[in-house]
Length: 160
Image 1 (spheres, helix red, strand yellow):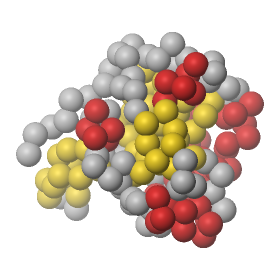
Image 2: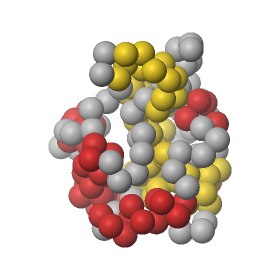
Image 3: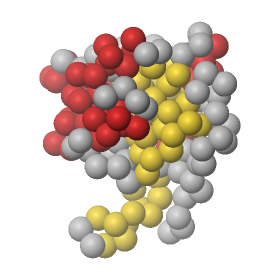
């Protein structure tokens, strides 16, 4: 196993097109063309306790983030059908995207070696990125905690 290449602030954000939970597709650069900033966060698995907490926190903050020009995209390897169940079960309003091949995870350095219960394993690295309207990474955070992360991110962005 090797450590994934990590994105740095100022680097161009890798473009992607991924399926949503609602039979649609989202393309990162299309959102940027609309002049939006995009928060892309990677999480290990829908409907697990930590991922649910994080998704609910982003949903609770969505109106405030959108008012400041941000779109929120949650990315996991889960199939669109599982993401649809996740949305329905927890009343999520953020956009959920499916990356079953982990290609986008890898492009962002959000899949690779990590410590899990003291052991080194290969898996999804809970990560968050803010992509500016210019397509460049403004914030790159790896190994974030599910609980309290959205509040910290809002503070980091000056939105608290």
